[in-house]
Image 1: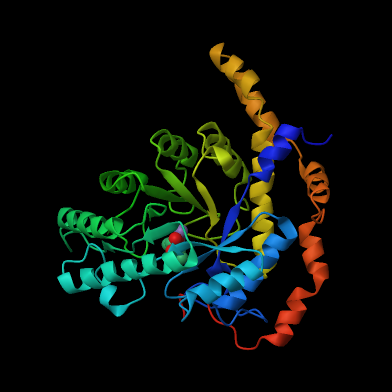
Image 2: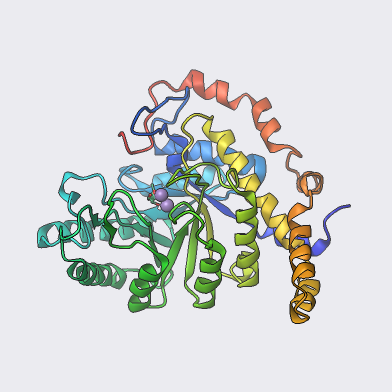
Length: 388
Ligand code: LRH
Ligand code: MN
Ligand code: MN
C-alpha cells in the first residue's frame, strides 16, 4: 500500500527546524563527552545541519542561539547556509549564562541588569534582520529558589514591561515567541513556568507574540496535547521545541521515550489547523546528543516526527467523528489506536524514493563517509554552550 496522494502531499508540507546547538558537544553537569569532528564554529554547525536536510528533505532551516552562535558577519553566515541548501531560522536569546543574571534578567529588580537583558534582545532582533529570521525565541531562566526570596508579583510586572519594550522593536514580518518551563534552573518558582503564564504575557503584547511549547518542560503525566489544543484554539501556539523526557528536561531524541505522546500531539496540531500550510506553528527540535553521534541523532529525530505525522494523517477523522457523535467510546478509541499502530515505514521509504531521497536516510548517511571526513578535517570542536 502506498500513501494516498492526500497524505503524500500533506507530508510534503512538513518542515522541521534544527537547533545549531545539537551539533556541538554536550553532556550533563557530570561530564561532557566529545565526538570527533565536532563543529568548531557556527559555519561548521550549519554544514552539519545541512546534511540532515540533504538525506531527509525535512529540515530546511537551522535555529541559532546568541551568543553561542555569535559571528562577525551574519550576512556571510546566511550566504553560507543558503549555499548549503538551508536557511537561518529562529534566533534564540540567552540570558542565563552571564554572571549578571544570577538573580534574573527581564524580571530583575536592578534597572541596569534589566536594561542589559533588554538590549541583548534588541541585538538579537538586529541579527534577525540580517539573517532573515522570522522568530525571536525567548526562554527565561528567571525565578527564585526559596520562598520569600523575592516578590513574585513585582517580578511578573517587570517582566511584562521588559517584554513590551522588546516587542515594540519586533518587525511586521517577525514574531516574539515566549517559552515556558516548569523548573530549572530555579527550583522554587520560575517566572514563566507554564503555558498559562506565557499566554497571559504574550496576549498582553499583541498579535505577533505567541507561545513556544517545549515538550520536555512539563510535569510528568501532563496532558500536553490538551495544551496544544487550547493554544491553537486561542491562536497562540507559535512553535514547538520537540524532544523526549523521561525524568526532567532530558532533551533526548524526540519520539524516543514516548512515540504515542508525539502521535497524540501531532493529531491535535492537525486538528487545530497548526500543521503545514494550514498554520503558523513552527516545528523545531531542541535536543542534545550527549552519547550518540549528533548528525545521525538529528536524522533519527526528524524521521521520528515524520513517522508520527504520517500515522496522524492516516487517522480516519470522519469515522472518528461518527463514533464520537454516537458516544461509542470503544469504537472511537479503536479508530484512534488503529492509526497509531499502522506501520508506515515501508510507505515512507517509497515516498522518499519517489522524491529522489534515500529510502533509508540513516543508512545512506552512514554510507556517505561524512563523519569520518569531518573527524579527520576538524580538530578541537566546541561544546554546545553550557560548558563553553
Ligand atoms: C531551556 C531550553 C531553551 C533554551 C535551550 C537551550 O531549557 O529548552 O529552549 O534556549 O533549552
Ligand atoms: Mn527549549
Ligand atoms: Mn529545555
